[in-house]
Image (cartoon, rainbow, N blue to C red; front, side, top):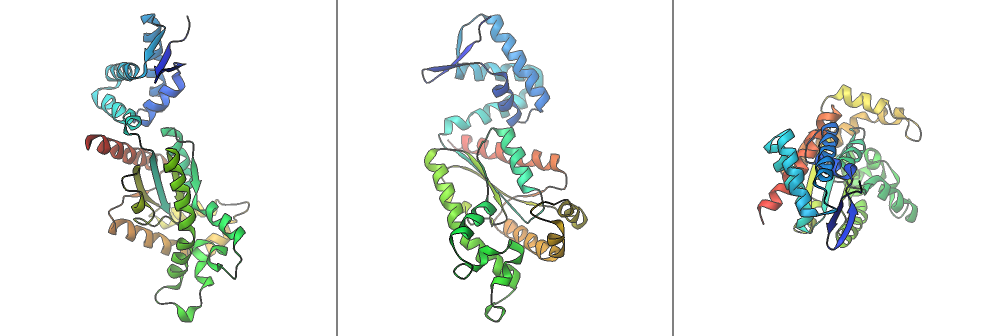
Length: 295
């Protein structure tokens, strides 16, 4: 039997179990259950004998199948998640955190679950800036975030030198991060931006009203677990270099957590990555749902 064509805006594509399962998964359904629901929906479409179905009608039919199999709450979350398209604004997720807490892994997993293809690390922005500006002109970007204090003259620093150097680097990277976010907003593209340079309440504050924004700090509260994460690094980023600076890295984490709490931003403990992903997904769903309810 030919595939059912899903029509939206005058254009149509064949129904895809994979895409439907991804949308269901983003709404909180376990991936294996999401695929079962998507397959059941495919069977229902085949039984109907209809050659095509409108995207809005398909959404309601999917919610109906989901309600039968997973309950009313799952159907409600799915419809809220699907409402993101109707908002006409991109979703932007900002995940800050100290080195070694798993924010890059969490960002990649989260993006995969919610169907975002653009994931950018602020450290990549720092590397680009470093390629264009010499050490003499912009010294802070030529150090890792936890070593940036070495770029400062200790005699001219008020307060903690490590934090002062880190904030100098944050300021240098912020312009590049803002440019990437501006481009995403202009294109209407959802994205995940992750990195140590995302101080809560700084980059995100300028995005208000232009996107559906989710901003959080990723941590590992347990020092031994955090140390173990750093111990597993290798290749171009040998573990010894991070472990030698473990105190400075923990200092950056404390600073970021303090800033998150002061600005009312959530903190996600990533000691258990599965749990952290669940928390991040819930934050995204809450943000989308709140935006829809405010309309």
